[in-house]
Image: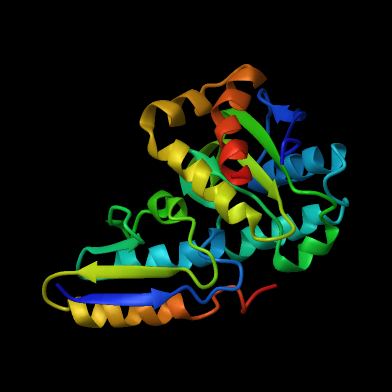
Length: 148
Length: 91
């Protein structure tokens, strides 16, 4: 799990025209680091149409459908920050934590992310992060927790 | 206090989609419902982040609690929802 968060998939000055564009960028980051096949992006869009992945605190967690699992080559995260915000069905999303997961390991991962977001200070730090190191420090605890 | 103990039925656990469906249903309940797993502190069932933080997987036992008028009915329908495979409808 130490490879879960590849620094190349932390992109903190992104711009997106709309929600779908933001999801495509998230998916592309996962493709770029070799975590998923390009087809995974379409399943991420399908998932979002089925139900919003907005979780609160300005954060969404785009991920593929169950059918998309076959297109996942390895479990990975991508963190994309949209400083200008993206309209997400009425909510404003600043940070996307995109997920590629094969098994149910991402339930632990989501739980750890939720713990971070429930802490107002950490949630703000994540939304305002401009350096990849900040994201790695905040989300690094996720990797430790999911390993145990 | 009216209580229901439920085993999570969703194949991939109480993660994004099943959690969202459950949280939206809990928000519509006429009473305040809490959910907890094991010895952990009860959290509001209508809070997406709190429910995600439970990290409940398929087969995890969770406890729902509510008080007030309509509590039993609300708990029954939420318990039924949790026991179902909420991932089954869409791929």
